[in-house]
Length: 458
Image (cartoon, rainbow, N blue to C red; front, top):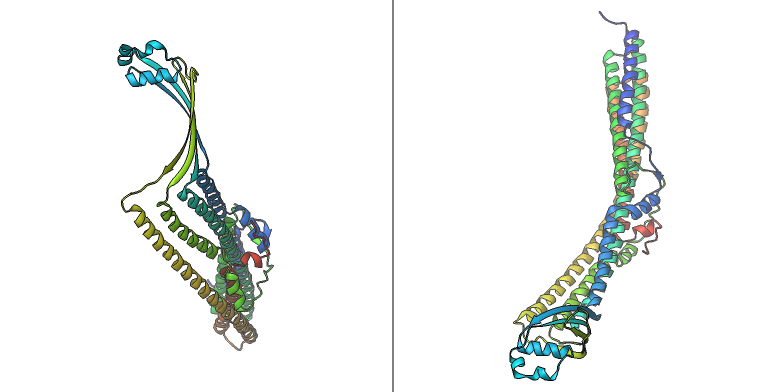
């Protein structure tokens, strides 16, 4: 049995009404509310809470602790010692009684001297040793300070990297939302095409096949809308990871003003990139490492002193008291060829560090030129994409009018509609590429936080 056309169309529309909320629910179920931030605010939150930044901050704190460790090699060492001795060794027994201030005339009896009774000796001592000149310790202190400065630059670089990741994530959200907006327009247009096809079919001027194709086109448009809604949720979740929050943060359409300047501006700014500065500091430390190896050929000089208490009954007893002061010069005259090879190794490592620094500088210069060209290309591409969209919109408008008046087929209209959707997607893609290329240029020049008006003097 064949259903009347009007009844069939009503059933088709009712089915669409029933199915459409399912698509909407599945697509938007993950879009939980979250904080709405500007791009600058999102970066500021990430700089405070991002886990990678906190890890580098801990590494910096550890590096600063190394300064104290190195400095301790130049500070006095104070030690306390308590010893207990029981012996009948003639020499030690006599010296123990002497240290205890218990020597008497009978102690010089040869029989007692040669075969003394066992004696106890509690020896308490406190000693101080102060280095005066230790070449390796002095160089090590200098190197630890330079390494701490290098880690500070690494922290600044990590903050730039996280800021760039946040900017990229924000642009991804804005782009995903724009794709979602475009998909909504596609659903509205597909709904209108289905309405027109339904009207034409009910008035016996259209084909049933056109009605089915229009219905299928609407279903596909709704599927695209579902996918774009999911992509928005994923993009927001990615930003939440960078901000170290469990919510789904959102960003506004407010754009950061990355004003394009001359190439020389970016090249000059890149000279102060934190990672370059860190490389320079470590190359300087490689030079100090040569000095560290050379310091092994020099003696170490220091002074010291001790205070002693001796007692034959109690720990910390004070039957006998004594002290001593001393000065020492310790010189390792020969250690095989170890120091010679350590010096050769340090010189090669210094040369390696200098070459690596030069390579990094060349790489940065290349990346800036590449990023600048990408900005110009992306700007041109965005303009061309907008032109293509304008012509595609006009073509679709004209063809839809022709279809409404029965002058063209639905297939031709759908083909033009596909071209229009591609043009819309192209505009979104090219606009995102342009914004991203500006952010990349700012990041490669080491001025991203400056362009975001965020103070990084930390």
